[in-house]
Image (cartoon, rainbow, N blue to C red; front, side, top):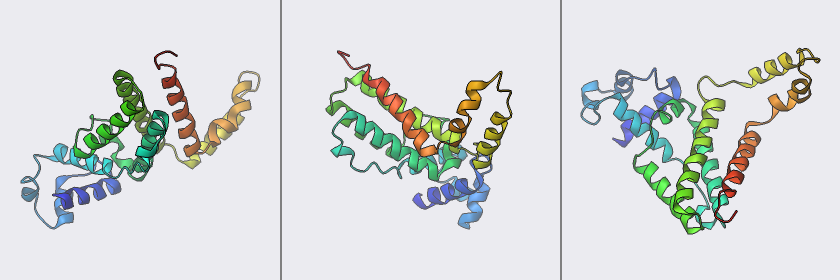
Length: 206
């Protein structure tokens, strides 16, 4: 079954989840669709496994050595984002459901345990894990998904801003380059810092 899921992920990476079909997978495997139905009830069940396989690639190195919950959350979000960058076609599948496969459960347990061990109350730990995960996935969907803008879009948008009436949009013209030329990694880290900074304000006693 692992081989079937691996081939399915490769095909989703190539053609997208919507265009993917069990017939396509059967052809790639050199078998028939009837064989696939012995392992999966249908495409939806297989896509759940594909998502979990992607989450199994998330390598959160040094997590146990993180001195505080802030560093643990940063490591989690960065590792998740880097993995999603390699599989942008899987993003529509990831936002369609809460991942509860084996790999997702292991990651959730590992990160929550570290947050609790570093002093976060259980309610705030749960909200922090969810908020940071949503941020990483949402950023990836907007910036890296199948319909996300490419470098050319940024240049076109910059040119559009520069043609605006300076009397009506002086601030937009002043910020035009910063709005359109910040590298994705820097933009991701900036937003992540804001989220974690906001979580710090929710700590008891703050």
